[in-house]
Image (tube, rainbow, N blue to C red; front, side, top):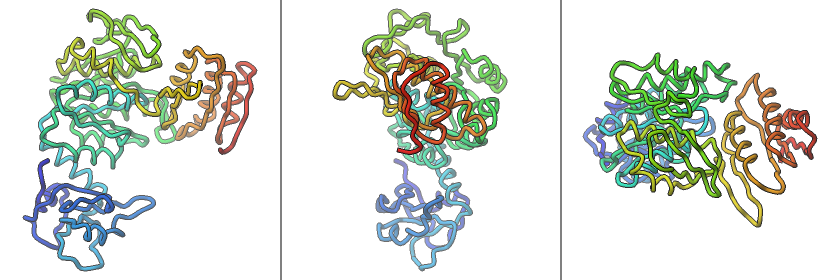
Length: 418
């Protein structure tokens, strides 16, 4: 991995060197003093429940090569020290600087749901022959993305990163750091409405990813969502490529046939001989697979060459994850649900052929004024999916139960907490 000098840290952060020598060598950047490696720079991040400045001595004891702070340490030290206005912004500046060192394809994935599965699919399909850097789990925010970018190394041939947002302007900021050569939008749905206010605002936020796209880059867009497609086209600039995916005839990557199998899904694509097998349950994963395949198409990778690799895709954790235990089948879909992702999990529940179905439903967060209506709708969908028992938990448990009971009678229990 390319090293740093203190002078390069200064250049990236536009900070002020208040102690030490700018030619000092630095072997990477860390924000957790407990895991800091010798000769790394320690960046003192301030958070809502912690302040990295309280751990400067621990970083010094761990042989930090440099300190990056927003206030001068109270205890004098000979270690090179850079003062910046905001250490969180400095982390982003360092990540963007490091990203510019690598002329490799970087694929940025965003959307209302399916981001992590699509990101994992793309990275999995590309990694058979080439080393790929990818976002670990869901580290997709103003801390996680910079840390991912700082892991870029000369051995990587591709990078696949996930961009998340729950406030306006966050995608644009993250995209400027990532400098993508390819932008993938999985779908647009009613997520984080408490902060966005409307579905139109969510769409604008997600598609702001295209503003930072490389002038010769490719945009991968859901062709079945016409409002998304139209706005994406208005943001595409000359020299960029647009690849659409979906079931509509106008889609560049079009699924024409889908069948549920015992352990996954089989797909037929227009213009591709034979079937592709996806070892993930739930028809919503067809969309995730199409987005990943559209990305490969834009990269010039043939679907035939990844047929076996697709078959070997491991299932993502906590996203329509099927767990079989003592005769029970558990669908674990409990990571940060929104109405669209919850509805898709219920579709999967409805697909399962079992004697008895129990739904444990918790609150969906950050929906603002749409929360009551959204939870009522989830209750209706739950009843429609064929559940026998509903255990509703949380502040909106009664709304979920009411929506279900208005659809049909079923055994219901309500809990405020567990």
